[in-house]
Amino acid sequence: KNIAESRIHESLDELRTDLADYIAELSEAFVKERGYFSIVLSGGSLIGLMGKLSEAPYIKTVDWSKWYIFWADERVVAKNHADSNYKLAKDGLLSKVPIVHSHVHSINDSVSAEEAADDYEFAIRQLVKTRVVSVSEINDCPKFDLILLGLGQDGHVASLFPNHSALNEREEWVTFITDSPKPPPERITFTLPVINSASNVVVVATGESKAEAAHLAIDVVAPECPLIPARMVQPATGKLVWFLDKSAASKLEDS
Ligand code: 6PG
Image 1 (cartoon, rainbow, N blue to C red):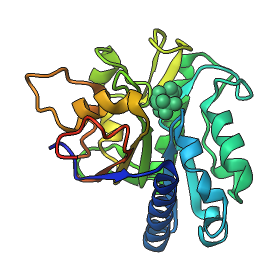
Image 2: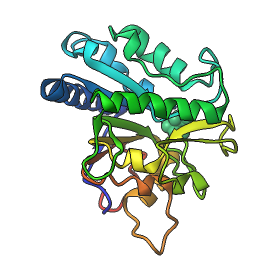
Image 3: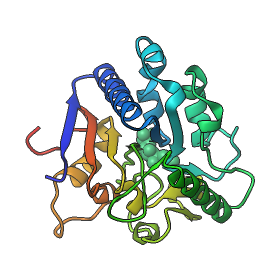
Image 4: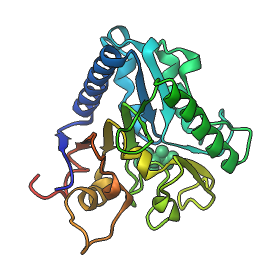
């Protein structure tokens, strides 16, 4: 098996509570250890599944002022556009919790995809220099405390789609694509080296439509199988945990 841990939940409500607990515990541990918590969000259903964080007890117990917030991927649309991952997170979570606005590192929406990717990488470099974001011991990549990823039906994570050349990017931390198979076509995304340098990676998948992709990512051993992007999420020294509901876990072996 390809994973350190998979947590399969009977209900979405149970998954939501476990996910909120997990994030809150990591936040507490990193704030204690280094005074900051660098957390990377994705789009899709993930934000809704993190929603309990804006409720009791988390709203009071989490040290929100220490959170530094990033995105694993973003669509090249205005920040107030319905397709914006930033807007999704703002409306669903960030506007409901006492974060520090200057700690929210959203992607520039007023430049080209290429420039936005470069700007984002530059911004992250500055935060690595000051160690607000840790640095990997094995390469010079940022080592985010936690990267949260959703799972596409086709096995994509962030905006890394099957068979796309962005999967092969080894130099850049942030890249852009203009041909996303899932609209909108222009996107900015963290690359695999950054994802795989994180201290913690969490992949969240719910619903029957994710069952096949979860199976291919978790159970199947290359080379006899298609190497889907989610299968390439293999933190070098960090911890990988999958949060699944029963439907998404329904095609897993031994489940
Ligand atoms: C995006 C998301 C993407 C998402 C998956 C799963 O920009 O499309 O960041 O990576 O996490 O597509 O989305 P759902 O959870 O909504 O199925």
